[in-house]
Length: 444
Image 1 (cartoon, rainbow, N blue to C red):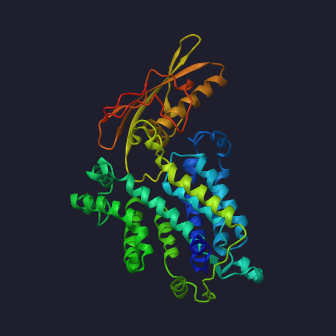
Image 2 (spheres, one colour):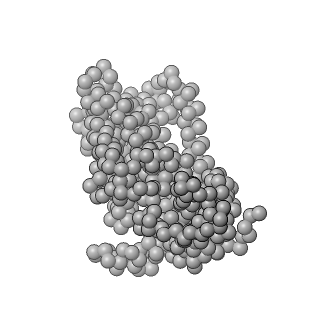
Image 3 (spheres, helix red, strand yellow):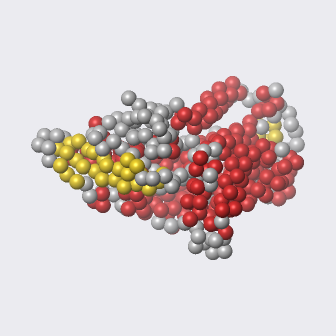
């Protein structure tokens, strides 16, 4: 049964077409990041960025060279779409995108992480065997089929993403529509739809539709009787997100995945009329079958377990943010914070009030004040700067944060020297104070 499910030969039109769409989209993402000034604001102008913890050494890449870096990634996207030196270019993009992702988290979207996963998966898939320059240059290399596991790897990855996105919405601020109301308040000036986005009925529709869409879209696309309806819903859902939230290529990447749910002959009729069809469904067990099953099993075990980690970390993830990233928790909260830092010389007791404007730009200041890991990282940064000047200092943070419409409350224990604290991504940090809406006591 496993052989039939995963190793049947099928027409590779879905994979080939997705490679073309994927290459175009990542090229637009990277070139667009340059042209809109995103690269300048986040990777060229700042002297300091909030990297993912443990990757502070990537600061050395900051500067004008990042324009060229993103230009190279955009060009790799074109080569990927053309199927030119595909394997090398796909791996190169995957590595470069991962490095860019780890370099900063001040501007963060979940699709940045999704691109890491998909580009990593695509690096192993034979997406260049047809309708590619590689196949044109070497006709013996050309192949019109793929093993069915290729389709199911993508489908399972999407099922995990959408399912966790739905489950994450089953919490109080989504179910009473308050977070949706907050998200829409900033859209009231939108042409034509601005007033409609402020209606209670609209908020209720978005709330219920968001949960149901994420939960049901993959099964609905898989089942032929509901496939076209699901495609129509996807088109509306993702274009709505693109217009209202302006989240880059993510909506269009999500639509591109739909090619894996349609019959290859349908895709050929619309997009690939000159491609030779493959009609056999014979089972062909490749020599790498066993390693592939083990590797796939390990990968998807991590993908299933990683978004659950916040359930075993004490505290409300909505407040602590511990376990929030890499968990498909999308559009769930807004955070606003106020933060001040005091540095105390351990030798003579001299106290210094930190002027944040001397170290961070406005966006970094806003982000840092609201997120515990940012506060900790900035404290570590201050400690290192003073150490270079020959001072051994303690660093204290006084913070007040509001999540959604909940009242402002202290986030960080102001009595704790954050310069002495270590970061553990798998545990709760006692210097993060309890959520103001919970009756939980601070763990001892």
